[in-house]
Image 1 (spheres, rainbow, N blue to C red):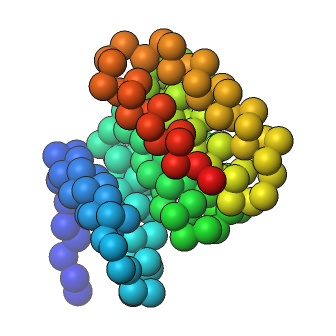
Image 2: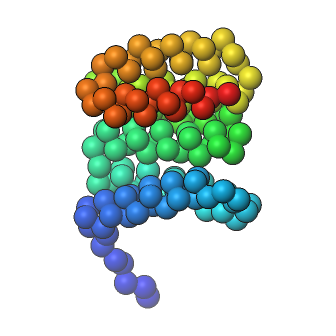
Amino acid sequence: MTEKIEITKQIHRQLGVDLFNQTWDLMEKPERTTQDDDEMIHAAHASRYHWGFAGEAVNLARGEWQISRVYSVLSHAESALYHAQRCLDICLDHQIGDFDLAFAYEALARGFAISGNIEQKDKFIQLAKEAAAFINEKADRELLLADLKTIP
């Protein structure tokens, strides 16, 4: 018989952080293999899973955003859009604004870009730019605006 291991909130939080960072490392890897891509997908989902036990709504939104970004990087439009919409829904349901709301719009714009829906892409780029005006930190605002320029 196997012994049940209790995973504390602190352990869930640390796993969420570590897997989030691992996902970023894989996204930034210049030449990923198919195994790297698979690991990146699983790490992003696992990070979001652990934040579900240890985080607050903002952590859930950021997890959904990262999953959307992974799928955008891999050109999986349907999954990218699903998770981008989840990110936006969490932001709206919990009145999360600032950086997170703007990046929810960015994620939708990026997903629509890879799906080929230019009208929706342009709509969400505009919404992201409008939301950028309400980002408190100048560096965060500049990061968003620079990231919008990378959307094809």
